[in-house]
Amino acid sequence: MLNVNRLINGSIAAPWTGREEEVNTNSVRDVAAVVDEVQNIDHAMIRIHDKFEEDADERADYQDLEKRRLSCLEFLAETPSQSRRDMVAKARLLLSSELISDYEMHCAVANSLARDVLDPE
Image (cartoon, rainbow, N blue to C red; front, side, top):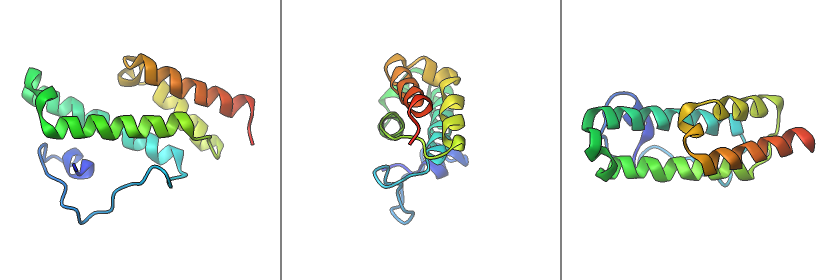
């Protein structure tokens, strides 16, 4: 498992040490924090791509980031916002070019935000 925070802080291929607690998206209720995580993952993936170019997709650290990103996006698509802050975070993410290029997940998060706005709890 990859430690995204270490990757974001400059060490591109830093392995996960197992010492830092992983985020369990099944129990996380702070949608805004997961949005921030997706954006951090996107930036880390861009840095890997810049450094390794076409070989980036074959790297284990890049593939780990892809899996983590998908898990976070699925969480955002399935989890209702608990606050206005969460809704704003989802909307901010929908404007990111990285998510716009991922048509399926962009639609899923957009549908989730629409449900949040039209049917607040």
